[in-house]
Length: 248
Ligand code: ATP
Image 1 (cartoon, helix red, strand yellow):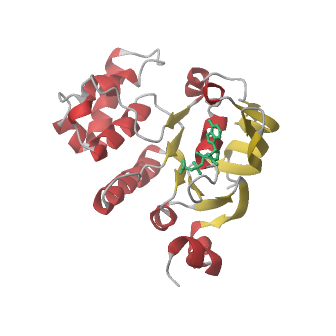
Image 2 (cartoon, protein in one colour):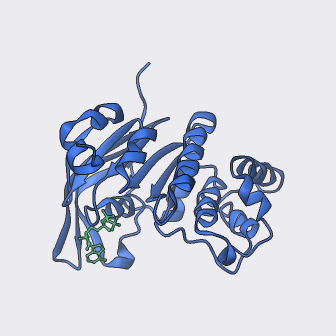
Image 3 (cartoon, helix red, strand yellow):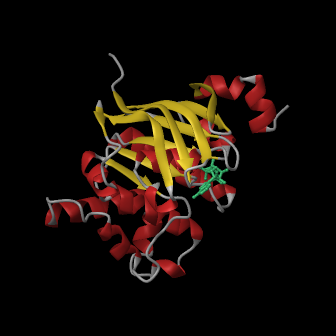
């Protein structure tokens, strides 16, 4: 059966401060039910692409100056981040961004604020999040600021899940985490994808891990997509091996 396209980024250009051209025509699609990886080194434009999608560039004096972004065929460029969450798209920002003075459980509950179904449904989803992240259940009464980096990353993903998203934009989940925790988090992303049907667009510098868990990948260099394809093909590509996987 044909693959349904959720997100479509079509040839976008992004400029910061009216002069710094950072994205020079980026196109990508996120299919329903997939894990799509956005790869590339430091400064390639991954975060900028995610922020362009969720309309978070204004506070950084950035602007989409060309191209189009649609979700389920409808333009989303003028939607606020909150309106986008209501459409089913939520971003987990780089650096985790939990509220440090709130407990883990309070943080998770803030993720449900855009919902109108309330009460029992929210409690059921809290339970769902704790089932995927047993560590968060153990730490639910702890102030987020006193939990580990891995737990805060889990909290950030868990909070995103509390809005019942169709698509999660996940920025650099591996950042600053030990390899074993990175595996654990990617494993949970995979099972959320398979069992809850959540689609992911994940930005990662860790090409090796990302291409093991993703279905498709895009490689960004200096604001352009230089390569794209099924993850299994990218893993075998000689250039990817040489420049991104460090295997040859
Ligand atoms: P990282 O892994 O470091 O986040 P990235 O691939 O996500 O890298 P971006 O953060 O999107 O890259 O940055 C792309 C380019 O845009 C970089 O050259 C960066 O210096 C520049 N840039 C990012 N934010 C701004 C800003 N607010 N003003 C000016 N330039 C910026």
